[in-house]
Image (cartoon, rainbow, N blue to C red; front, top):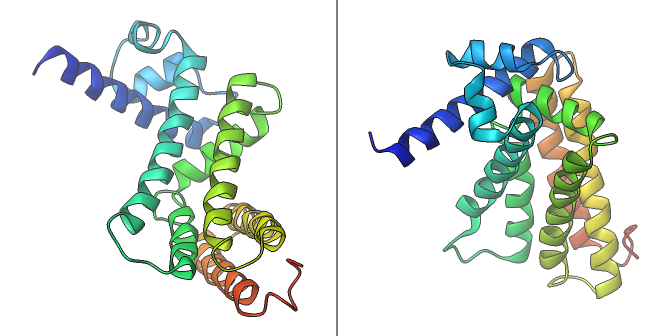
Length: 201
């Protein structure tokens, strides 16, 4: 295997090990040793590829962000979708099997908590929030006035994040995530079907 391919493979394995370690131990108790042990690699390889634990943690969040981005692109690229259909695809992308998996949910929850104290994680979380808002607003603007679209995007983003959080913390997360996706779609349907009566005025 060529060296660039080996590097990419090892980085991917370390990111997957980080997700597993955070799911098992939490972010605060995840260490270079717990990650390298799960990955079956020496602890020094983390510093070599990521500069240390913090660099790997941020790379793991970027990985989740990229997976979220790709989930949407798969659903919309090269397809003739109506604005409402695109809005529904945005919802689906946020509730994929990966994003509702135990390693991903525990890692997201840890990131959100730590983002209040770590500028690097806070920056990545801001990118995530702004991307969701902009994607929603782009489609809402084709159906509503500018002011209504702005408010609708804020409301829908809060609905998606809020239901995702409640589902991740639920005693029955799989059922909760399924219901959450349905409720978010119904909420958006209400916003675009009755804009004059909805809260997006």
